[in-house]
Image 1 (cartoon, rainbow, N blue to C red):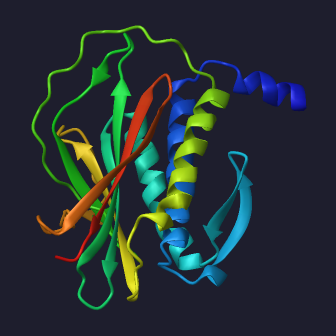
Image 2 (cartoon, rainbow, N blue to C red; image 1 turned 30 degrees about the vertical axis):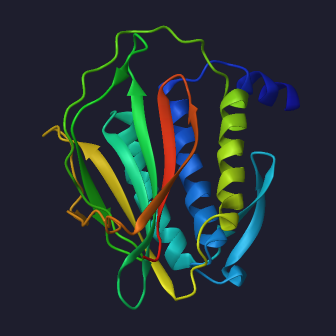
Length: 238
Protein backbone atom coordinates (compact mmCIF):
# COMPACT_ATOMS: atom_id res chain seq x y z
CA UNK A 1 0.00 0.00 0.00
CA UNK A 2 2.79 2.44 0.90
CA UNK A 3 4.53 1.65 -2.42
CA UNK A 4 1.31 2.32 -4.39
CA UNK A 5 0.80 5.63 -2.58
CA UNK A 6 4.38 6.71 -3.26
CA UNK A 7 4.03 5.80 -6.94
CA UNK A 8 0.76 7.73 -7.31
CA UNK A 9 2.23 10.84 -5.70
CA UNK A 10 5.13 10.84 -8.15
CA UNK A 11 3.02 10.50 -11.32
CA UNK A 12 2.04 13.43 -13.56
CA UNK A 13 -1.32 14.96 -12.63
CA UNK A 14 -4.36 14.46 -14.89
CA UNK A 15 -7.33 16.83 -15.29
CA UNK A 16 -9.44 14.84 -12.82
CA UNK A 17 -6.52 14.59 -10.44
CA UNK A 18 -5.98 18.35 -10.61
CA UNK A 19 -9.67 19.03 -9.99
CA UNK A 20 -9.53 16.79 -6.92
CA UNK A 21 -6.43 18.60 -5.59
CA UNK A 22 -7.89 22.08 -6.09
CA UNK A 23 -11.29 21.13 -4.64
CA UNK A 24 -9.62 19.52 -1.64
CA UNK A 25 -7.53 22.65 -1.11
CA UNK A 26 -10.70 24.74 -1.09
CA UNK A 27 -12.31 22.42 1.46
CA UNK A 28 -9.45 22.55 3.95
CA UNK A 29 -8.61 26.18 3.19
CA UNK A 30 -12.15 27.43 3.81
CA UNK A 31 -12.40 25.43 7.02
CA UNK A 32 -9.05 26.74 8.21
CA UNK A 33 -10.05 30.36 7.57
CA UNK A 34 -13.34 29.94 9.44
CA UNK A 35 -11.44 28.49 12.40
CA UNK A 36 -8.47 30.87 12.43
CA UNK A 37 -10.70 33.94 12.10
CA UNK A 38 -13.07 32.78 14.85
CA UNK A 39 -16.21 32.87 12.71
CA UNK A 40 -17.46 29.88 14.72
CA UNK A 41 -16.46 28.70 18.23
CA UNK A 42 -13.37 26.49 18.39
CA UNK A 43 -15.53 23.74 19.90
CA UNK A 44 -17.29 23.47 16.53
CA UNK A 45 -14.10 22.12 14.91
CA UNK A 46 -12.21 18.84 15.04
CA UNK A 47 -8.58 18.21 14.22
CA UNK A 48 -7.40 16.08 11.30
CA UNK A 49 -4.01 15.67 9.66
CA UNK A 50 -3.58 16.86 6.08
CA UNK A 51 -0.61 18.09 4.03
CA UNK A 52 1.59 17.00 6.91
CA UNK A 53 -0.12 19.59 9.14
CA UNK A 54 -2.78 19.51 11.86
CA UNK A 55 -5.90 20.96 10.20
CA UNK A 56 -9.20 22.04 11.77
CA UNK A 57 -12.48 21.20 10.01
CA UNK A 58 -16.00 22.06 11.08
CA UNK A 59 -18.15 19.48 12.83
CA UNK A 60 -21.30 21.58 12.41
CA UNK A 61 -23.62 19.66 10.08
CA UNK A 62 -25.16 22.78 8.55
CA UNK A 63 -21.83 24.39 7.70
CA UNK A 64 -20.45 21.08 6.39
CA UNK A 65 -23.45 20.58 4.10
CA UNK A 66 -23.22 24.17 2.81
CA UNK A 67 -19.49 23.90 2.01
CA UNK A 68 -19.90 20.48 0.38
CA UNK A 69 -22.77 21.78 -1.78
CA UNK A 70 -20.56 24.64 -2.96
CA UNK A 71 -17.56 22.40 -3.63
CA UNK A 72 -19.57 19.81 -5.55
CA UNK A 73 -20.56 22.50 -8.05
CA UNK A 74 -17.07 24.04 -8.00
CA UNK A 75 -15.62 20.65 -8.93
CA UNK A 76 -17.93 20.44 -11.96
CA UNK A 77 -16.96 23.93 -13.08
CA UNK A 78 -13.26 23.10 -12.69
CA UNK A 79 -13.68 20.07 -14.96
CA UNK A 80 -15.04 22.29 -17.73
CA UNK A 81 -12.54 25.15 -17.16
CA UNK A 82 -15.46 27.38 -16.15
CA UNK A 83 -14.37 28.48 -12.65
CA UNK A 84 -12.21 31.61 -12.52
CA UNK A 85 -12.40 32.67 -8.87
CA UNK A 86 -13.64 31.58 -5.45
CA UNK A 87 -14.19 34.16 -2.70
CA UNK A 88 -14.87 33.75 1.01
CA UNK A 89 -16.30 36.97 2.44
CA UNK A 90 -16.47 37.36 6.23
CA UNK A 91 -19.19 39.82 7.22
CA UNK A 92 -20.47 41.52 10.34
CA UNK A 93 -23.54 39.68 11.57
CA UNK A 94 -25.08 42.97 12.76
CA UNK A 95 -24.33 45.34 9.85
CA UNK A 96 -23.69 42.85 7.00
CA UNK A 97 -20.54 44.87 6.23
CA UNK A 98 -17.66 42.91 4.68
CA UNK A 99 -14.70 42.74 7.07
CA UNK A 100 -12.45 40.33 5.17
CA UNK A 101 -12.43 39.01 1.63
CA UNK A 102 -10.33 35.92 0.87
CA UNK A 103 -9.90 35.61 -2.90
CA UNK A 104 -8.61 32.60 -4.85
CA UNK A 105 -8.06 33.17 -8.58
CA UNK A 106 -8.00 30.05 -10.75
CA UNK A 107 -6.45 29.73 -14.20
CA UNK A 108 -6.71 26.68 -16.42
CA UNK A 109 -3.88 25.57 -18.69
CA UNK A 110 -4.83 24.35 -22.15
CA UNK A 111 -3.32 21.21 -23.67
CA UNK A 112 -0.39 23.18 -25.10
CA UNK A 113 0.48 24.62 -21.70
CA UNK A 114 -0.94 28.10 -22.34
CA UNK A 115 -3.11 29.75 -19.75
CA UNK A 116 -6.76 30.22 -20.63
CA UNK A 117 -8.22 33.58 -19.68
CA UNK A 118 -11.46 35.39 -20.37
CA UNK A 119 -14.45 37.22 -18.92
CA UNK A 120 -16.04 35.92 -15.73
CA UNK A 121 -19.20 36.13 -13.64
CA UNK A 122 -19.98 35.33 -9.96
CA UNK A 123 -22.66 33.13 -8.34
CA UNK A 124 -23.77 32.15 -4.80
CA UNK A 125 -25.71 29.28 -3.21
CA UNK A 126 -28.18 29.60 -0.35
CA UNK A 127 -26.86 28.69 3.09
CA UNK A 128 -24.67 30.11 5.92
CA UNK A 129 -22.97 31.95 3.05
CA UNK A 130 -23.94 32.51 -0.59
CA UNK A 131 -22.68 32.15 -4.20
CA UNK A 132 -23.42 34.22 -7.49
CA UNK A 133 -22.14 35.64 -10.92
CA UNK A 134 -20.07 38.85 -11.74
CA UNK A 135 -18.24 40.35 -14.75
CA UNK A 136 -14.64 40.99 -15.83
CA UNK A 137 -12.93 42.05 -19.06
CA UNK A 138 -11.14 39.78 -21.50
CA UNK A 139 -7.40 39.24 -21.28
CA UNK A 140 -5.29 37.98 -24.18
CA UNK A 141 -3.92 34.49 -23.51
CA UNK A 142 -0.18 33.98 -23.12
CA UNK A 143 1.74 32.17 -25.88
CA UNK A 144 2.01 28.38 -25.38
CA UNK A 145 4.76 27.39 -22.96
CA UNK A 146 5.68 23.84 -22.10
CA UNK A 147 6.06 23.47 -18.36
CA UNK A 148 7.70 20.68 -16.42
CA UNK A 149 5.09 18.22 -15.19
CA UNK A 150 4.52 18.40 -11.45
CA UNK A 151 3.79 15.48 -9.17
CA UNK A 152 1.07 15.38 -6.54
CA UNK A 153 3.74 15.44 -3.85
CA UNK A 154 5.20 18.69 -5.22
CA UNK A 155 1.76 20.33 -5.41
CA UNK A 156 0.88 19.31 -1.86
CA UNK A 157 4.11 20.91 -0.70
CA UNK A 158 3.03 24.21 -2.29
CA UNK A 159 -0.43 23.88 -0.74
CA UNK A 160 1.16 23.25 2.66
CA UNK A 161 2.91 26.63 2.41
CA UNK A 162 -0.41 28.41 1.76
CA UNK A 163 -2.04 26.63 4.70
CA UNK A 164 0.79 27.82 6.94
CA UNK A 165 0.13 31.38 5.78
CA UNK A 166 -3.57 31.06 6.58
CA UNK A 167 -2.67 29.81 10.05
CA UNK A 168 -0.28 32.72 10.60
CA UNK A 169 -2.83 35.28 9.32
CA UNK A 170 -3.87 35.98 12.91
CA UNK A 171 -0.53 37.80 13.33
CA UNK A 172 -1.34 40.52 10.75
CA UNK A 173 -5.13 40.61 10.37
CA UNK A 174 -7.23 42.79 12.73
CA UNK A 175 -9.05 40.94 15.50
CA UNK A 176 -12.69 40.28 14.61
CA UNK A 177 -14.32 41.44 17.83
CA UNK A 178 -17.94 41.26 16.68
CA UNK A 179 -20.07 38.23 15.74
CA UNK A 180 -19.53 37.31 12.08
CA UNK A 181 -21.00 35.19 9.31
CA UNK A 182 -19.64 34.30 5.89
CA UNK A 183 -20.57 34.06 2.22
CA UNK A 184 -18.89 32.05 -0.56
CA UNK A 185 -18.88 33.46 -4.10
CA UNK A 186 -17.98 31.43 -7.18
CA UNK A 187 -16.98 33.32 -10.33
CA UNK A 188 -17.37 31.61 -13.71
CA UNK A 189 -16.57 32.56 -17.29
CA UNK A 190 -19.25 34.32 -19.34
CA UNK A 191 -19.86 31.38 -21.69
CA UNK A 192 -23.61 30.87 -22.32
CA UNK A 193 -23.00 27.12 -22.16
CA UNK A 194 -22.30 27.20 -18.42
CA UNK A 195 -25.23 25.87 -16.43
CA UNK A 196 -26.02 27.75 -13.21
CA UNK A 197 -28.05 25.59 -10.77
CA UNK A 198 -31.46 26.91 -9.77
CA UNK A 199 -30.34 27.12 -6.14
CA UNK A 200 -27.62 29.60 -7.13
CA UNK A 201 -28.16 33.24 -8.03
CA UNK A 202 -26.44 36.53 -8.77
CA UNK A 203 -24.63 37.86 -5.73
CA UNK A 204 -23.14 41.09 -4.46
CA UNK A 205 -19.31 40.95 -4.77
CA UNK A 206 -19.01 41.95 -1.08
CA UNK A 207 -16.18 44.38 -1.72
CA UNK A 208 -14.69 46.46 1.08
CA UNK A 209 -15.10 50.21 0.66
CA UNK A 210 -12.22 51.94 -1.12
CA UNK A 211 -10.01 53.80 1.34
CA UNK A 212 -10.84 51.35 4.12
CA UNK A 213 -9.06 48.30 2.73
CA UNK A 214 -5.61 46.74 2.91
CA UNK A 215 -4.51 43.68 0.89
CA UNK A 216 -1.99 40.91 1.45
CA UNK A 217 -1.01 38.56 -1.35
CA UNK A 218 -0.50 34.95 -0.29
CA UNK A 219 1.50 32.14 -1.88
CA UNK A 220 0.29 30.37 -5.02
CA UNK A 221 0.32 26.80 -6.27
CA UNK A 222 -0.09 25.10 -9.61
CA UNK A 223 -0.68 21.64 -11.02
CA UNK A 224 -0.19 20.53 -14.62
CA UNK A 225 -3.72 21.78 -15.28
CA UNK A 226 -4.65 24.57 -12.87
CA UNK A 227 -2.83 27.44 -11.19
CA UNK A 228 -4.19 29.27 -8.16
CA UNK A 229 -3.26 32.64 -6.68
CA UNK A 230 -4.51 33.76 -3.28
CA UNK A 231 -4.91 37.05 -1.48
CA UNK A 232 -6.82 38.49 1.47
CA UNK A 233 -8.30 41.99 1.69
CA UNK A 234 -9.38 43.33 5.06
CA UNK A 235 -11.14 46.38 6.43
CA UNK A 236 -9.09 48.93 8.37
CA UNK A 237 -10.25 51.85 10.45
CA UNK A 238 -9.88 55.28 8.89
